[in-house]
Image (tube, rainbow, N blue to C red; front, side, top):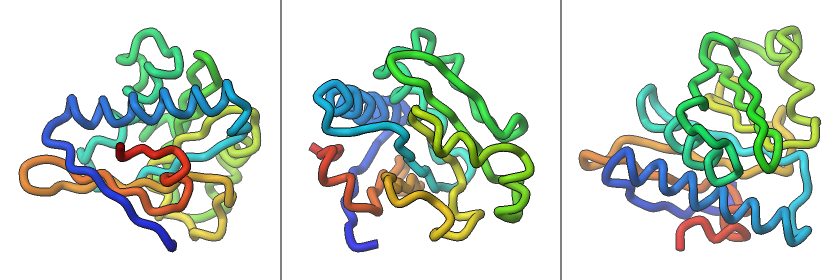
Length: 161
């Protein structure tokens, strides 16, 4: 990881707006041909830090009409949403190995033409994930959240402006 940028999010609405902002930029980049699918965004963070809220904002920006339909896939492992692009929302919290990830049929999502959002990516080795990705972390800080980009694509998307 050679890049780090961060933004403070005072409340849940700010977390949602950060996701929405990134979703709009992704949509613009896709429309301009500056980004191709498949693409992966990983979201690390403690329980309740706002990973799913961030995904709801991102999904609405990408045409998911009812953001409330975007829910945590902790128990289902994967949810699919169809908007301007296909969104594959994965949660690997309950998995303990790459083999379990593969046996659950989740690896195929990473290579389908769409946007994969993976919560709890740290449960698997970093070198398992495709290189074409944006790594984000959300943590609790000072009564709000801190959204931190951990990979260089964040600079390309300018998600913190």
